Image (cartoon, rainbow, N blue to C red; front, side, top):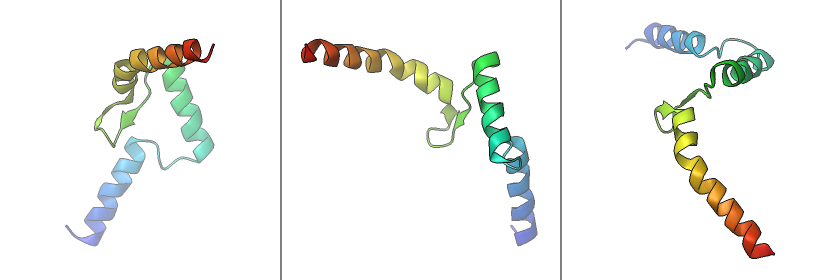
Length: 73
């Protein structure tokens, strides 16, 4: 892949994920997606929808937090 092809591919990714917009606009779009659609975005680290990861881990996280509060008393 040539330098110009790589830059064109990078620009497509920026546009697809809104990374070509200013940071406040990116944040507003992210919050809007969470509030209106329940979409938390895509996790590049796990290559999955972030909402699915949260749904998977939230029950265990809440259980640990509750147990920590009970032990503290």
